[in-house]
Image (cartoon, rainbow, N blue to C red; front, side):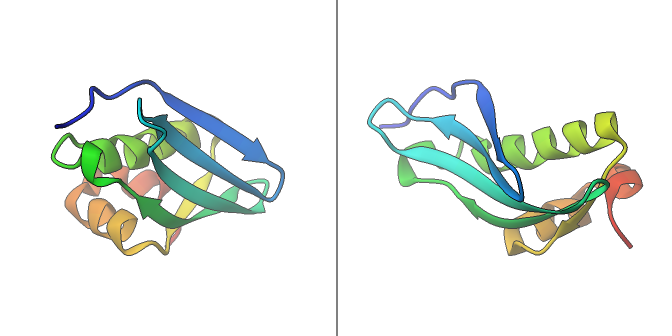
Amino acid sequence: MTEELAAIEREDRGSKGRYVIRGAGGADAEMTYSNVSETLFIIDHTEVPDSFRGQGAGLRLVTRAVEDARAAGKKIIPLCPFAAAQFRRHPEWADVLNS
């Protein structure tokens, strides 16, 4: 059984933070990040529980980070393999990719 995707929440705790989609059974889809500077952050991990699979939860998390980076004039280093793969698939995100 798959869950309906909820809104994405952002939790910023200074040098670290995460984007999260909360699941009904307590399982969260999350993407964590580390703030390097005022204008740069690293996406370091993405985890999507089986109950969210096939619904685009991971892509939604990375897309939200890209949107937030754009709005704040920041750049992203996608160290997480999933996030890096999404950046390769979405050349339109090049403006926020730290090269």
